[in-house]
Image 1 (cartoon, rainbow, N blue to C red):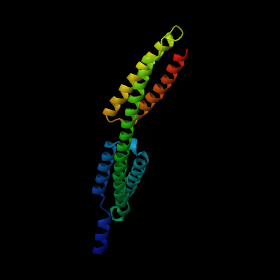
Image 2: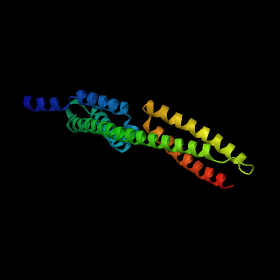
Image 3: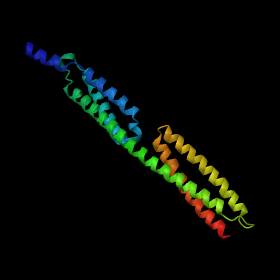
Image 4: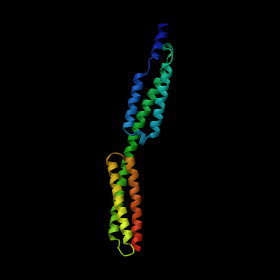
Length: 185
């Protein structure tokens, strides 16, 4: 009888340490921006944590001698591992995106430089003077976008910077085409 009571008592203790570890791993995953860089892994971990919380609530509602937290404990341990995996994946992906953005920033700078050179060499005549002025204004705006992208990169917002720098490259290349068309006039 005492052995049975000991077994029941051992299983009836809520897995507080495992729950705390899972919560701490969730916080760590959020700090490395797992929701941005590994959203699927984070969502799976959160689903597991939610299931563990639901299982715990179900066991808490039972009479003390009939509670069994074994499966709940396992779910918290699994959620903890999944959060750690999501954090690791996010850190790896963030570094990958950082390297991509750094390369894109270098490419954008080169495209902007060549666009500025092409614009300075474009002949300004009666038929294309207005076009050249519009291109200058557009190029100034692209330069501002490039500065914004660099600021986002320096601030660690790599995904935001990536979108902006890709737009800068596209627009600068488009302006190169406009310069060529204006020069032909």
